[in-house]
Image (cartoon, rainbow, N blue to C red; front, side, top):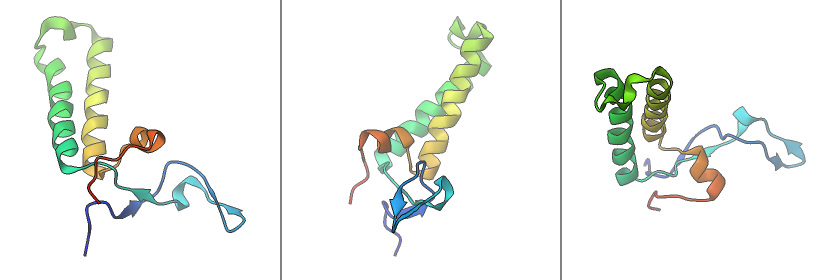
Length: 98
């Protein structure tokens, strides 16, 4: 049965296992985002992506700020979709219930 914090796929760093160094793509990536965190990331991500397109509020008139906001929105939605946040992993944080 699939648990909310099960093994997902690859991990973002290298480690040594059994005397051999594993590459980035050979590692496991464990979910570290709970449902509430995921919902908040989707809402915030969509708001950050859509606000510059609507120019609401008018602070998005600068293209650099608009692109940065849209990129951040994509990152928030992607991390929610994959249930994994690399920054949380580096900080040892998990909002996922075990």
